[in-house]
Length: 167
Image 1: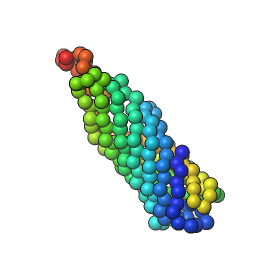
Image 2: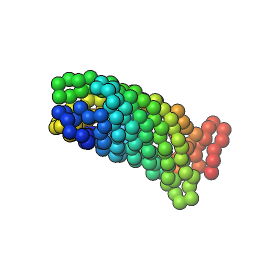
Image 3: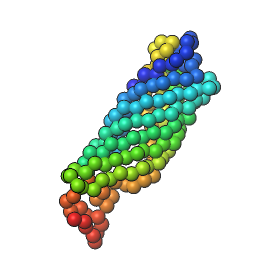
Image 4: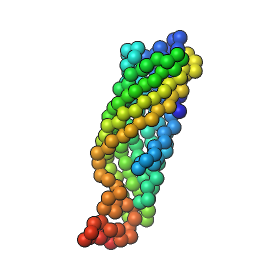
């Protein structure tokens, strides 16, 4: 859920050209993570706007403790539906990813991934200054596949490929 607080007085939370939001984030699929995030929304046109966002997440990762920091932007269309609106969007993002090793002195697995995403959101104005928002999005990242080549934070022997292993 996203709690957006608009800063100027208006008839609806949607009548504001600028808003600040905080939210809880959950990701599933091959990238299971949970965390918190924040958005700055700029909507200079009635039906089009821009969200800038940043998140801090903890990732379910077998190689140790991993924390990711996704951030980017969404360009969206706001389609009014009574006191609510549907928002299809697309954007670009990056993820600053930090894998802490399981054992002291173990190898770190830090990376930066870049990507594109698209999704759809649903937002309801609950007052003149507050709205609630939920969305679903699909991400496509370019970066290192951490499930390949035994890239973990474990110092034990790991199978790298069919002919090599590391100690």
